[in-house]
Length: 284
Figure 1 (cartoon, rainbow, N blue to C red):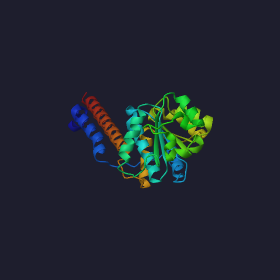
Figure 2 (tube, helix red, strand yellow):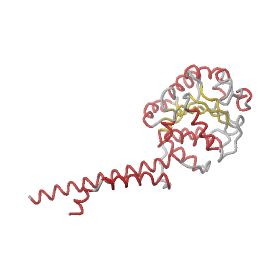
Figure 3 (cartoon, rainbow, N blue to C red):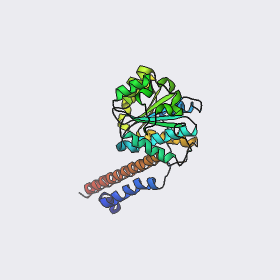
Figure 4 (cartoon, rainbow, N blue to C red):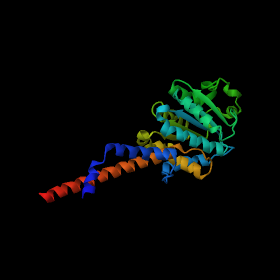
């Protein structure tokens, strides 16, 4: 009985230490908790799998900042790894000025994994202010909106862009969005106006707003927060497209273990409390 009563008096320092170890452990040594892939994630992955070296390029828009990096950056890496492994050409841009740094960070990381030539296999248009005007303008002529790429090179001099005039020359648009301007702008001005095929990756708190458009078919697939990113990483890993670090999967492992130990401590505390209360009633 004394042991059970002691459960209600676990020092908070011990609890904090256990939770810290549970969260930090998987970030250091991956444990690989199985991931259940949701249908909307599978849909986007399947759409990408339909593409190949002869397909039109994929356009990825990094509409997020470092604050959303844990959820959206792993999506960017996983999608680019899939494209690179399948020799699908990729065009990148950003509706957020901070998104350009996310793209360059991905370039730097993936250079060690894949041998790709800039301007031939991938291109980076950069950021342009005025999201609505940018997306509508791209529906007519991308070069008129981005006469130069992010590095100042004339867009029409890039072999990859020579055959890309507007959305009709893009096989799939994927926006990784943390707010506005983001997926809503792409839905209104690219998908609804010009019929662009649209995939969406968002932070977990925004996912509920996108689901209706997945059901209507206007959005072909959805990645929801870190969970969605870990699902996509898992699919890419199963195809052996990459052996890189699975950041979202590690993050989900850490989050799951942290939640598990919090639940255990709550359960232990409640059991100890009720037993203690019962013993007091008996003594009376």
